[in-house]
Structure formats: C-alpha cells, structure tokens
Length: 262
Image (cartoon, rainbow, N blue to C red; front, side, top):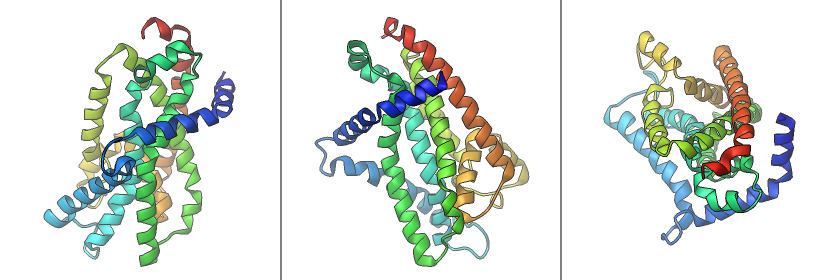
C-alpha cells in the first residue's frame, strides 16, 4: 500500500507542481511585492529574533563569538524550522480548503501536503541562500553539506506523515489549525532554534531535548556546522518513519469516507 501511494505521488508530479505554482502565484495577490513576501517574511522573522536576543539581550554563542556568529546559528535553525512549521500549521486546512476539487473529481488527496510543502519551502530556500552566502564570505563552509539531502529526505517523510494526519483530523476538528499554530509558536522557545546548551542550564536543556522537533533542528545543524549527534539522528529517523507510516494509514482509510464529512 505504501508503494502504491508513492507511485501515485510520482504519477501526479506534474499536478503537484502546477498546484504549487498556482498557490504561490496567488499568495499575497494584489500586494505591491506579491509572492515575494513569501521569501521576505521569513527573513524579517530571523532578523527580529537576532536583534531581540543578540543585540538587545546581548546573548552570545560563547565568550569569543560575535553577533554575526549568532545570526548564522539562528539562521541555520530557522531554515528547517520555518519550512516544517509552515507546512504543519497549514496541514489542517489542506482538504477543507480544496473541498470543491476533492468533491468534484477523483483527486489524489495524498499529494496535497507536497503542494503545500513546495510553497512553504520557498521562504526556506531564500534563507538557505542567504545562509550559504554568509558562510562562503566568512569561509565557514563545511564538507558535511554534501549530506544535506539526508535530513531533507527525513523531514519530507515527517511532514508528509503529519500533514496527512492533520489534514484528515482538520476536516472534523474545525479549529485544529489555530491550535497547531499556537503550539508551534510556543515550541520555538522550547527548541534549539534560538539557543544552545551553553546558554541554558543542564536541566533546561534536558527539557528542550524532550521536544521531538528539537532533534530535527540538531540534525540539520550537524550538516551545516560539521558536528554529529547520534541520538538526535536516531530519534529523527525513527520519528520520521513512524509518523509517515501512521499518516499513510490515516490517509488511506480516509480516502474511502472523506466525502461524508466535507
């Protein structure tokens, strides 16, 4: 059954791209900068975090690091965080916002999260380009960047799985999107996106490590900065596969009865 779903995604790849382009083109339609806000907004968010935490509260990675180092640290965490949280927060509305399409034609609803992910990844791509340019300027590029496709693949599995679950649940639980958005907004402060273990005490860091999303950020940072945290990679891998399989089970069963609820 899993292979059938994967084949369906591959078979409908052109549809996924066309829907993503349509959504991206329609984003902020009528605004002065149009869809460019998709890339500008995450950059503004990163800048705000850096200014508040680094310049106002004067937080540093260590005693020898400057604000520029902290900016790169935050940016390297915000790249996967923004892609992940945008996709997850929009997931509860995927089926509900495409009700007419899902009702009128035999639409492959398992492809909806990929369309959403492509649109949400635009801002992350902008951040990654900025991050890479800064790394090239200061000469900090690590050879471990060649392994970047690995955490990207794990993240794809995780986002697909959780998006399938939330998209189906969101049909029944109307305010799920608002609940997920608030939770994710708070979770950024209980993750290593803005801080590292040297900035907080051991007990606080252990609490942060209880957040499953923390291990996703750490795994991406390992690739960016040339480090390695075995348990974070193990948790990330297990979590991605488990969520993907559970999500596949949910969306497969939901395809048979989804029209009764929309």
